[in-house]
Image: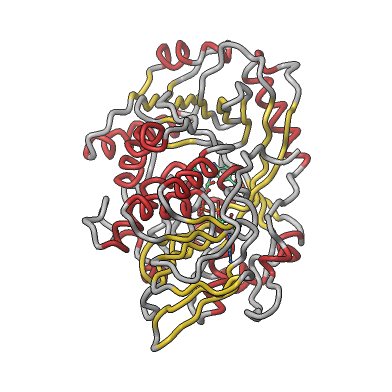
Amino acid sequence: MPAPLLQIETTPTLPEAADVVVIGGGIVGVFAAWYLARRGVRVALVEKGRIAAEQSSRNWGWCRQQNRDARELPIAMESLALWQRLAGEIGEDVGFRRCGLLYLSDDEAEIETWARWRDVARSFGLTTCVLSADEASARGTATGRRWKGGVFSPSDGIADPASAGPIVARGILAAGGSVHQMCAARGLEIEGGRVCGVVTEAGTIRTRTVVLAAGAWASAFCRQLGIRFPQASVRASILAVGPGSQGLPDALHTSAVSVTRRGDGGYTLAISGRGQIDPTPQKLRFAREFVPMFARRWRALAPGGLEGWRAGFETLGQWRRDAPSPMERRRILDPTPDKRQIRETHQRACRLLPALQGVPIAAAWAGYIDSTPDGIPAIGEVQGMPGLVLAAGFSGHGFGIGPGAGHLIADLISGARPLVDPLPYRPERLATSAWGKVAEF
Ligand SMILES: Cc1cc2nc3c(=O)[nH]c(=O)nc-3n(C[C@H](O)[C@H](O)[C@H](O)COP(=O)(O)OP(=O)(O)OC[C@H]3O[C@@H](n4cnc5c(N)ncnc54)[C@H](O)[C@@H]3O)c2cc1C
């Protein structure tokens, strides 16, 4: 069974023109369009499949400041505040709760790293509680054992990946924008060196500003325009168990397994950082750029198969704008979960949390996590292509920072004071090597 997702009705007919067209209805695209629509900007969002059907409904739902790289912490902090306000602004519950995130460990080096991060947190005015062995064991009673230490971040939280994206998309419609599902953007029209339209499978929308929030497809789309965007993906496999377990923390990380309470009372189970690398033409092309990232993360990664190659999202090919594109052939990236990893994750979770034993697996799925070489997203206007704002490469953090990213994009486009300093995210930084710059956590 695939990741649960709220299905919504959207706008049947495409506008002829819009102030801004957002390509991609993941969490980043919907928040960008929503913050624009709320400012009275005429915005149209086009999504080749269903809203949030790729990464944005397949994640754990963590909205995390804890252990964030200092470059991403400001946008993570602002995002938590925006998540908090969202239900009141949009009039629907997206499952957001500041329940706090709990980290438990027996590894002294790991505990030491978390303790060091407390200094980063302090310098940003953020509270994080480093837990002694007694405190960690008390918070982790559901595990029925003692721990050497841990961390609790009280102001962090979780939201519901199954409904957040679709609910924000409904907010766009309510704010006067339009949302078009099953509508792939095939390319851009350029005049005098700047963007002047978006060619979709349903027709062309005239516009001077485009937000490319295409997730794992962004680099291939950029390639059609001669823009180099180094991006690579990892296939992560996770599962959900149904409701029924009592006394578990809402969000718990251990090196063995991580557990997150879902909106329906069930739990998402996953092994943090674990993933498979499916070789693709794009990965081969950008292999050199990703060596620094791979050097840090290789222990958790395993070689995958040719599914990613066949899926076409990391193609080096050019496609035509007057014929069906790879995006129409693959409406939703729905990679096969790794069965062995699913089994291992479930076994580890049942060993860690006895209350999960006997609770059946409700669903298992995989998602391609798109990353930049330094693990920090690319947000900003593309140099040499006025009117094109890139917002991709969220490197496994995009759900939590989706509101902040969307707000920042709306600020950059409307000329408002940016929510956070946009400098760390500028796409042109990716032209230089990532050695020494890979995000800490
Ligand atoms: C297993 C897993 C666990 C994760 N856990 C977390 C977590 O706990 N917390 C966290 O913050 N992040 C987490 N993430 C990462 C997070 O899900 C992503 O960073 C985030 O969802 C990216 O959002 P996005 O909008 O950039 O991309 P996506 O959600 O991938 O959306 C991009 C959309 O663009 C559409 N599209 C692409 N090309 C076109 C085109 N040409 N025309 C029209 N539409 C197009 C696609 O169909 C897709 O819907 C996790 C990811 C996975 C897979």
